[in-house]
Length: 402
Image (cartoon, rainbow, N blue to C red):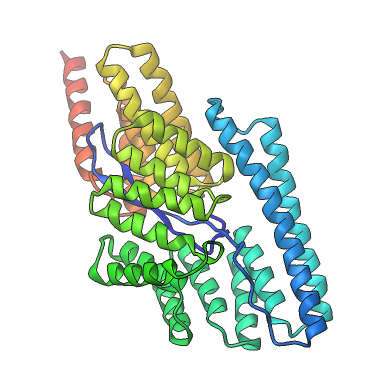
């Protein structure tokens, strides 16, 4: 989630229950803040100075991000499931580059406190760092200085990242009332679909219009939200191959973001291609170690793989995969700060999935799934899974009493 975002809502679909569970939409948002910056109306020399500053900080951050991405993909290709030392070092350099860029822009803002482009550039960097409050503050200041649509779209992105779909829709509406942009239409379409939990006609109309605008833009100015949104709606309709094509496009448009890889992993999970889902989620996690959605997808993929191993009689392999599923579910809970229902659901499902799970594991599974339901009452298959686990507990108790 970064924007890098120019937001993305990387919403994807996760298979959740036992081996045959229904697909769920997942909100992952990230960023790609390397879009072109509009210049505030200042004298020509000042304009050039501002443009040079923005380009310099943007290029430095982009260079560090691309180096980090290359290492993240290489680590996943090598089967590395955790951040190794070179990757950690590259991540630290990227974080430092963003901090230095924000510091440089802040210094320039002190010299030119009425430069909208400087505030907007800093807001996008705050967004990349997931400091959404600071990003919105800079977006609001940008709008005060220059009543433009882009600053409102940035605010919409931050709300989408925070899963505040109503405010994301409202800000996108404000942006579109000033100027039509592919990004704003896409953000609104994504927020509508996620708010309702279905590919509504209104969401499809927004994404269709976004794509119409998207096609007319040069590649470097295209918003990856468009491909992300069209992939989301395709996945919601069960058109998984189409969704994969759109998410491939998202990766091409947002090369340094984790969202596209996470979305691809989610679709592969729905297709029960567990190795591909694990690899895609691993790339997303390597790019963004705080991506709780990717941890949940990888947890569900490990669980699916373990159930296959269990069915095929490879119990030793199944145990290792179940252990990985539990570890990733716990990471999802940790990185989401315990606020994401699906993470608890996946932890419970992983504890309950082994056919020889003892009673204490089944009790823990029910507890975790109920936590998930408390956070997200709409979790599909949760009630059904609780009933099945409680049935297993009764049978275990009956066997003991005999």
